Structure formats: C-alpha cells, structure tokens
Image 1 (spheres, rainbow, N blue to C red):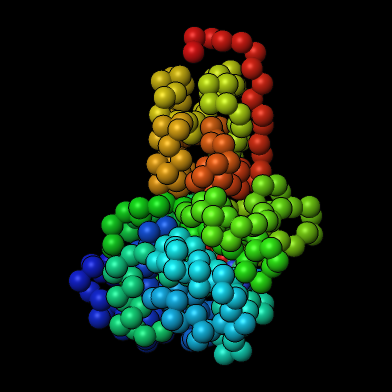
Image 2 (cartoon, rainbow, N blue to C red):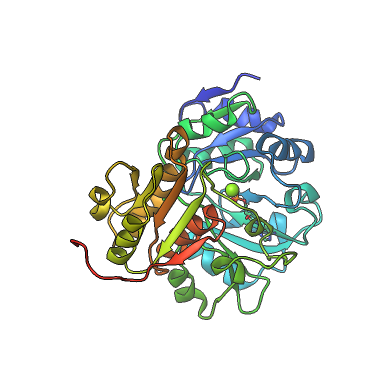
Length: 345
Ligand code: AMP
Ligand code: MG
C-alpha cells in the first residue's frame, strides 16, 4: 500500500478514507493519531495490525464536541459536561461507561470507553465530514515515541496505512491526560497535555493511579491497560536522572561513557563534550519540554548512542507528563542524583 500525504485542504478525501474503512493519520494538538471509523470493527482491527499494538490496549474515540457523548456513553456524570465545557476541544480524555454498540475492539472488552475532542481545526472538520467517531491511538509503531509531526508518523507508518494529513507540528507534544470519571473520586490514569492542577480546579479531589508514578509489580493490572507496556523507547536504553537540575547535570557528566547520549535542559547542553546531546527546552519550561521530548527520544535512533541519560523535570504542571514519558521510555530505570560537590557549575 502506498501511503499518501494529504494537505489541510484535502478534507473530503480524508473523510472518504474513514468512511470507507481505511486508516488515516490525523494531526491533533497532542500528537499525531492513527484513526479509523470507530463504529467499524474491521477498520479498527486494522489499527492494531498497522501499529503492532497489543490486543488488550483500548483506543480513544475522537468526537467533535460534548453533544456526541451521549451517543457512545451512558450514566454520564455532570462532571463530564463540566470538564468538556472547561477543556474541550483540548488534551483531555474522559473514561465513561460505554453504550453496547461501541465495538468491543475499540474498548478491548472493557465496559468503559475513552472519549476526547481534539483541538485541531482540520481534524475536527474531517470528523464532522465523515460523521463518525474516530478511534485513534497515537500514530507510532507500538513501543516507539509518539509522532509530533507528519514526517515522524510517515517514518513509522509508510506502506501500512492509506494516508497522513499534514497539519503541521503538534503544539502540545505529549498525549492527552486521561481521567477516569467512573471512579470515586475521579482518578488520573495518564498525565498528559492538561495539567492535573487544572483538573483539580474543576473537580476538587482527584486521585492519581499508581502506574503514573511507579512501575507495576509483575502481573499487576493498571486501570489504563496501555500503562503496563514499555513505551516511547528509542533503540538505546534510557536512564532517567532525577533531582535538582544542576545536580543531575553533574551526575550525568560523571557517568559519561564512549557512546553516551544525553537528553538535557538547554542550560546544560555544553557540559557533555563528545556526546550526542538533545535539548528539550529550559529547565523551568515544562510546556516546551513537552513539545520536544518525543522528538529528542526519536533523534537518537540515527546515532551511535549506546546508552542515554535524561534529565527530568519535577512533577508540577506539564512536568508530570514529561517525567512520566521519560520514565516509561526508561522502563522506570530512575536514579536519584546525589551531589558530590561542584565542578564548575
Ligand atoms: P494512546 O493514546 O496511543 O496511548 O492510546 C490510548 C490510551 O488510552 C491507552 O493508554 C489506553 O490504555 C487508554 N484507554 C483507552 N480506553 C480506555 C478505557 N476504557 N479505560 C482505561 N484506559 C483507556
Ligand atoms: Mg500511544
């Protein structure tokens, strides 16, 4: 199959691919998604094949607004409408009880479904033109960093899907925040483009699923099935170095080998001579780090880096999502930087 690259003008062609049961790369504000008609089980099954995605990892339904919630969900709490009013279109996925006619292949047999309204004018137009909910996970091969531009999605999906709509680079850069509204209190299943603090402003108490911050014990089942897989990984192993940023930079410098890659904040980029260095933005700017973290992880694949050290932001604001993606890329190999005294910083 030849994968076509469509432009923002090709709305009708893109909608036709969805309506005919094809696979379409869609731009969103978070990352590029791999979409299919969410009511067409055969089409949705092809998403799993194209990505090499495990069969027990459900997909998110993308809709053009809160008025579609009632079509696919039941027993919808008022909190869902309050969140949609505050944050849709935007990087928030809500887990709600599903209606029977949502295909099992979308939810992987769960009695809940994830629903989101993406904030990208082209994709909203495509969904409206197709007039179907679009089931879409991120548009990467399973296990790889999520794509934040059409070229990165083409790298992974060329020959596997019908087309990709080039809608420019993603403004947020990490996937949506997932909140489970069937839990009491509501529970954060995945940190993402909408900060936890913003959810708490609307909902009051929000609990945080254990899988967000720590690895699962063998056999333990997370509420968001996707959280149990190694994710976002470049080919070389990653080690996250946690702690205050000057301290982590010094730690990494002390541990450099012959083929070391470094993911660091802009301020420290000159501290690692001879290394492959990818910066992700200033230490105090987690929004910029979110935009760049997947590109940085992807960039090492064409290099001779045999191991990668990563500086990691604190868990506030979008830092929670950036730290989570880095730790998952590292398979939760995290070391706390201990300060052994200054060496020039
Ligand atoms: P992706 O955006 O590629 O990471 O894939 C969608 C994510 O949403 C995965 O991590 C899924 O585990 C999660 N997800 C989708 N539907 C549900 C659901 N009904 N309950 C919990 N998590 C879900
Ligand atoms: Mg994904």
